[in-house]
Image (tube, rainbow, N blue to C red; front, top):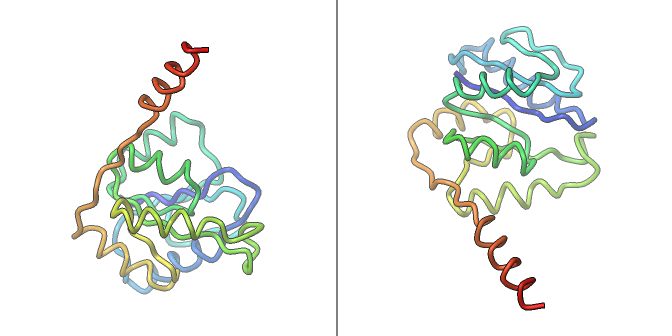
Length: 159
């Protein structure tokens, strides 16, 4: 199963939802899909969707997913890879009214360079990214939060 995660911000991501819908209709994508569509107003015709989910329902669906397709937000990406999911990230773009700027491209490109996620730059190629991500192994995410906390605590203890 594939889960599309578009977050809870006020920005739409109709471009991605439409592309996936078209590719499902054309038979390019054969997987079961569920989309958390957020503020998007496009309503997919060929896969299940809901604008927002409570945390329990979201977690339950994400656990079922083999692949997570998401916008380029750090929370959505990191949350999925922490759960061991293969992630395809597509940055929201300002020119399409999907965000105020193109900062998501930097995060997505950096995580791709680290071989943690699959970057898809063109929504019309999402079916190709799905096929590619299924065959490729990615590095697991390594959080350094505990090390940072210890370092801060050590510093504070010297004050």
